[in-house]
Image 1 (cartoon, rainbow, N blue to C red):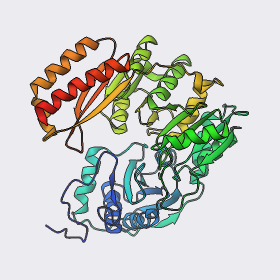
Image 2 (image 1 turned 60 degrees about the horizontal axis):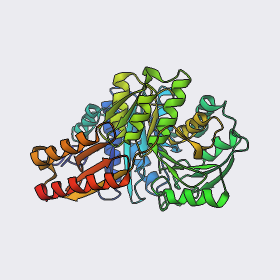
Image 3 (image 1 turned 90 degrees about the vertical axis):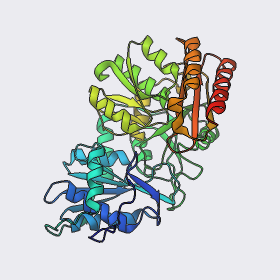
Image 4 (image 1 turned 120 degrees about the vertical axis):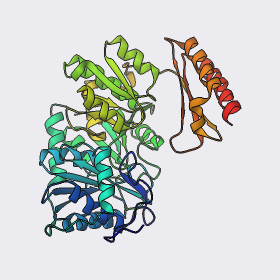
Length: 446
């Protein structure tokens, strides 16, 4: 049934785990952006909501930003255009400036042809499922226009974000430290090098020449070989690679070895615990986190809570427990004491703070166990729940690994696959267990 107010009819749920995301011109159009801006302003419940809109460097960003702003203004809100800014900057400044909403136009680590729209409340938190559902409902519900709002550009957004970073990490002395940054030709390309230089580091930057189409292209946290090669060429002490919207980070040491989110979170947790700043003496991670992390936290008497994959799930658990630190292996690292969002730049600075001048190559926060992941093509991934033979095999293998490793079998969220992951003390045992379980899955569901 077509909408009565000119907005697109909803044939399926638009919001995914990180806002509305899809191919520009197909799912994501100027018309939809306009409708989302209008609906979000209406649903806010504020007569004249103040809405910050920022974006990454994709060529479609300005079009979608403009459409969003027009929708906000038609619904009586004031749209504040901040230009290019990392996602965590929007979350942070929504709270600091006491705004009603913040909107980020970005598809994170996706290629430039995609884009996305994600909303944050005035508290800096991503909107709840209920709020997103209300926005979707408002897309097809006529609502009277209360007044005409304004659209204006706002200055100092990037400067204000840098000031917050400098206030939090200003005690860091990075003189003499040679660092390579890969900004993924994305939202961090100006601000990340600037804060590291302000703190005294000798900075080399790659992925800092966005042209609208090269965001995440063979660079950034999804292509860590680029930062590893750059660190090697420049003989730097370490390097950090961000993703397109700047909410995640991975590191490499001076030898070019990848340091993933698990290790970065372990470093941060031990550091914050020693400093008496690990609220709740606990940390939240996901089911993908390496078993070596759990062993290291257990040895340090730090409690670990585990959630399903997704930074949204990590954040919800942090809020529920009133803890401060959590994140994912992929590099989403959340420090609630700074901002309730993954923040790649802040996480990189926290890593340097945790190292305290030590060499990242000599890190000893955790010992990673060998990990083997096998994706098994199946006829129906949902049949896994009732596949008793598979779960019996999982129980047997897990019992044999008790205290030494772990087994994780789960369906893919998007494909006809079952993912078999095994961690064990050595590669031979790890691979043997994974292959045995994969054979059972294929025999039962293939």
